[in-house]
Image (cartoon, rainbow, N blue to C red; front, side, top):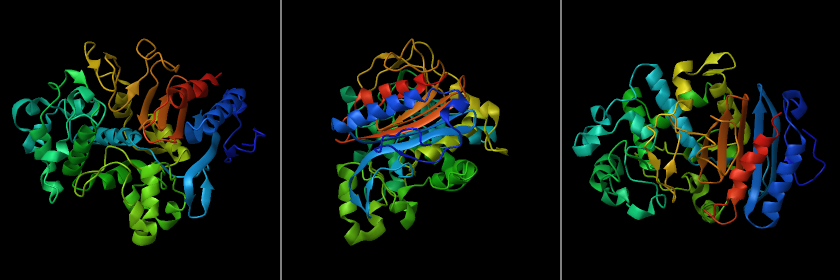
Length: 402
């Protein structure tokens, strides 16, 4: 794509120009100007996006910089690898749906049938569906539920996390009865990783690679601990945490960047997000989702199972009470389902599924328009969320569909 004559936009080769897939190219110019203005204001350090429609990538671009020079790189490029953060939860959810597809579990199955530590009190009532939809009542992500802050890892034996973390979750207790409220829980997705491990007999990360990433030809998508030297050279150094990790490189070598930027522990599945990927590779995942579980002639998952991403699983009276909200929400088996009745901050097609990652990245798939997008906006200040860099970007991107 060489449509823009503005030198700050770095573009990769695409499958087709926007007009071939009924997309207004003027919206790309608007998008580039919007992202650049956020960079100029010091709100974000970089912006990148990849857009797909009717089986073709028609835009793959990046602008801005990384936080410091890293292995000779300063520019953010379309093939720069960045941490997708909680967008990885959507990948974990799809992995769980493959187990459903293979009849190894069912949505209303009590987690206690698989994990004996949960065979107590209200924990007995938690089901696989509760975990997928953030309605388990389990410990909320730090900062997402300030009215009842809890740190489940304080109850864990730091010398033996693998054998103490499940009992630590139980000791921490529940914010609400299972099925009562939507409370964003990273712990729930760590637990789904444990479910994957126990039912598949292999580490959850390996299962996800074999069942999802490899069939979708997402060979660049990986966890930091598995990075090659070539991949490390393309890493985004995004914020203070990344810079601190990079500064240890001279002493620790590649181990300095072997851990994600959020808290993890040995022996606990890394399934709540954190994979490194590019916007382009995430379009492989989108294509599989929008082709009913098929990726270029290969069946990854059955169409009935993948359709659960679009199936609202929440009763009408459940309220989303995370991040200062108290509102109705539509949620499928691992992703939000857009509804203009409940989401006034962005404009998408009704029923579009999407997931944010730490506010800095967004994945969305629109079945109605056969359209998908992945974008990232690295905030200059860690966790300094700005709707203009997330909700407004999504709206601008979607507005180009003709």
